Length: 115
Image 1 (cartoon, rainbow, N blue to C red):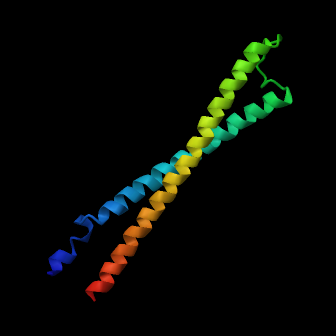
Image 2: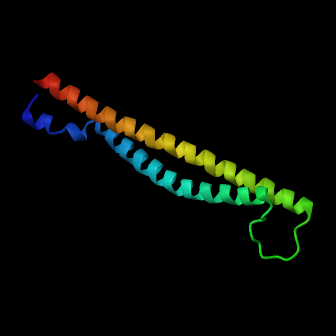
Image 3: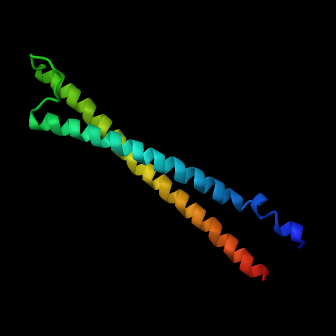
């Protein structure tokens, strides 16, 4: 293998692990931050409903029980979606970190083989 062949390491298929890992790590991490904030706000609203505070809607008349139950069900569903999405974004970040680590493991292993 020539010296020019060694310089093409990042043109090989191994660099796909690095690129995919960085993208997944960045996307998963940034989504986790956003979804963590949204999830905390959603769960805070749900806790207010449980405590009977009502979330400070500003209305002097309380909603009917059917309307309150429907609103609570929708809020629970939204909180469920947000918190599950947060969990999956953490999985994406971890998988991205594993791909980056695997890339550098293979790069180091190949470098040791050549010497």
